[in-house]
Length: 323
Image (tube, rainbow, N blue to C red; front, side):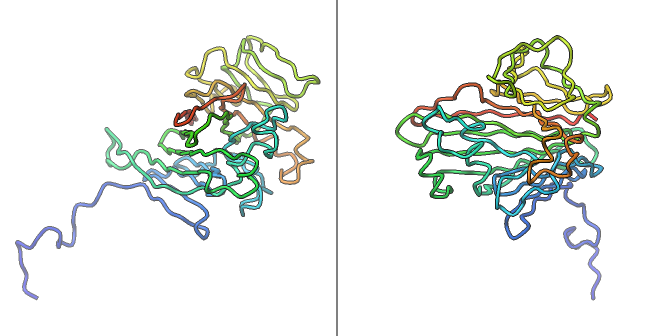
């Protein structure tokens, strides 16, 4: 072979490489989407429910709690991760439009479409690689099963975006009324955070805030004290943080901040831990798993959001990994 000293650089054995890029894959027989940043952070989402089932930092440490008995085959809603609640939080027997829907609606039990990815490059980094990747998922009336269509016969469109960054995770949802009449909805990001020891956890950002205690009979409305919240028994509360959505709600463990949650257009924060009642749930494991999780859930669930024909609504959360 004749040596050509001026051959094109593209043919040189050693060529300048592309900046590191986020890797996005569709796996498990087209049922999951995963993304990994060049620095190692990762996220995994089931198309069933668009449920986030894993979020890991650059060292591979898991940030979300997922029950050992969680159904990941599309047979039922996932116990753990981040299920998306829509169009009703819990059950609302007195709200005619959603009265016949199952617990937490149909978004978490419907198969979503993966709409694609987009990335952003890091600034001021040595490698110049991708610093975030956004994954978009879509759900509309046409994706629903017949039972859900019959129970909630409204034309709608949802776009759910999951953005993985080097310092955290952002989830946002756009809701559009694609029909000719108005309808109402609720939405919630049911985030199960993984912690080491619930007895050492405190939650700040809820001080002096109004909250609904769903464990009292009848359900009561109270105002939280000025101290941080600690968990020592079963809890199921809907807070309206006094500082508003932009003020962070911080989960700390042993006095050290662990996660910080800020919200956009999501005025409520649900705090839930089943305590020992978790052992009676068929899909909750291990039985003492309540020690290693706390749900701090950003949502719009106090009252109803109303959309007229053609209108859209958007809300989201940013979870920063403080550790």
